[in-house]
Length: 305
Length: 86
Image (cartoon, rainbow over all chains, first blue to last red; front, side, top):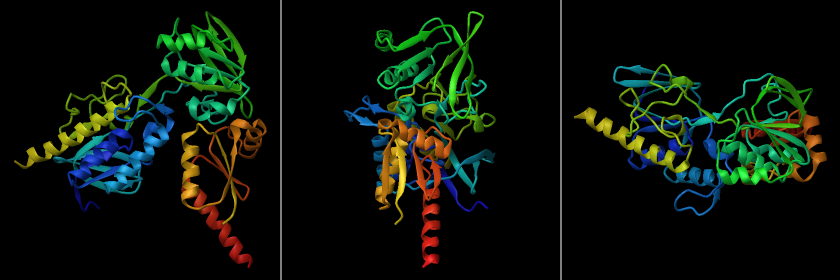
């Protein structure tokens, strides 16, 4: 049963959602911050060196600092999973695994997740040699052979990180060349442990109890390499599946927003990596979270007039 | 409080969260850094079948990931068993 009508509900507790919540609290709005966990993608970040005002931090330190800031501002995270969002007159109903909430505005800040390869063996060997975060799991492959799948900056960074840890690193790139920073390419090119295989399509991850190999196709030939770990770094997909029938999304799944964080539905705003124009930067997500909240507050004020 | 064993990596964010949470809750634990001991990786994997961290071992049960509710539930079970034995 819906008893309270909130001014805003913020879905997602990464930096975009957390920033919106801090602003909502400071504006003394009636709101909830809903997410099954806190920290978002900060929990998979290593060093953070580009957030203005902070010389150097790590994903965990940053996440802790934001958690403390939420507490300082009296924000209590509702650890619930959103199941559905629907319109009710001018308002919205947010249904979670634990309850139902009515709100005048909605801020979607659900972030993004690692893109899957969708090949046989990937799911079977998840946490059994298949990893999506070299910083988190890479050292488990100390002295072992690994494959890094991907051709962008994240894959290059993973290969660079692993060169101090693994005995051999195969970089499996589907394209003819890397799409990433030149300095990262230089770093791995000059390392004898790293072998890059271009124009290689990963077909299967093989093993028994744990990963034992990777099968790929290159120029019509199918080859197997023996590896103990496969680190998949092929980009990210936005966490927007729940909202595709609610707001307009772009072909790649990001929620279409304008420069004021408005979605296609008045009263619903989106911010951070789930939204269009994404650059996967903390400072952008924080700024968008702030903007979304301020515009939501303005939207409510305009409704009252 | 029962001693528990945690398998972690120094670079893993959830491992740091887990250890900080255990310290905050004053739960005594033994930390095993699997990055410096390949036999510890094998030990961990043979117990849980999972190659991922953090993992927490309580009373023979392996809890994969940072799941405070599960750890608390397992500790509660242990303390209940101890009280019953008395």
